[in-house]
Image 1 (cartoon, rainbow, N blue to C red):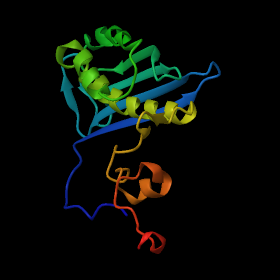
Image 2: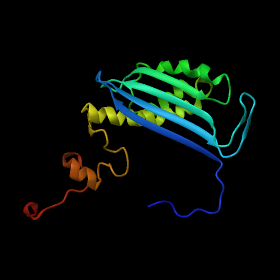
Image 3: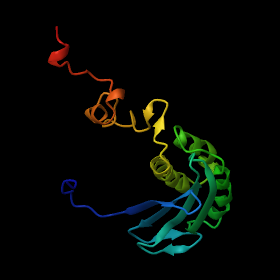
Image 4: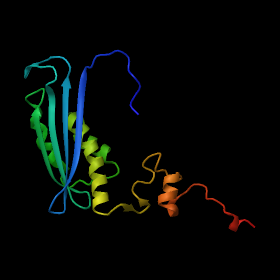
Length: 187
């Protein structure tokens, strides 16, 4: 069901993020993200002059290549449109992701590596969903779905709480909610 009908309003800015995962022939996975920011009005810019309504202010691509351990083996960054000439200089710092493993603490780690003046806020914004999809893709595809505490999904959201009906049905041995008492066990 869509959101309720909004008040009368005018659009200002749109950010589109698309992330796609791919299986490679060399038993690795590519996770590609694309971020486009566009304003619904002309934007004055000292580097590019007037950026026309609907034209990208930011148009950026990021690809991570992952192995079966969700370790990053290659990184590619492309900034097709930026508001400043200096922006693409930061592309090379994202090579520091090579050797990193996507997992718990991913968002904190990328903020530490590339937050503030160390990187690009737009690429950091793109790394968040790339990390999520990369983690899920490799876990599912490489059949490494289990952790020491069972499937990685347990306790990652409300629906997957260890005491939820979903966990009770899918992984009854890991269910922590109230157990049903059937008549056979009642004295």
